[in-house]
Length: 147
Image 1: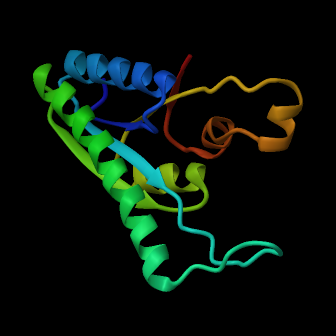
Image 2: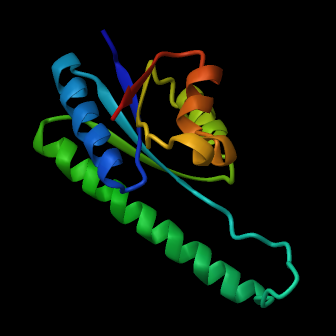
Image 3: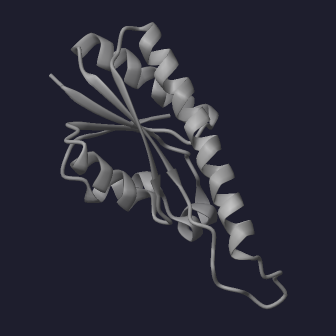
């Protein structure tokens, strides 16, 4: 049914549920799993009242975020390996999570995207938007959303 499944992870409880489901699905389809963590870039703009940081400090912060992302992805790979699922891990630097996930799915030739819905409601949903909603509406491959 599926040969390469991309799963988005951010380390949250809902994301971990999506990872577990993606691993089970990949195992049942004998599919490869591509685990993706999108890491933001450190904002370079200086706002009124903010403390400007040196390029070294910004690099240190970005490395810390990348290292944390890799630890998250390593945990996914370990869980997948325990179920006999071949896994590739990818860290992507981007400020737009939905675009990064769609581009990575295309680049990795995934035939399914699995991700969690964070279930924001009311004004938070309107103000913050939904990365999951953006992936659902802009992806050209199937998307499985888990709650």
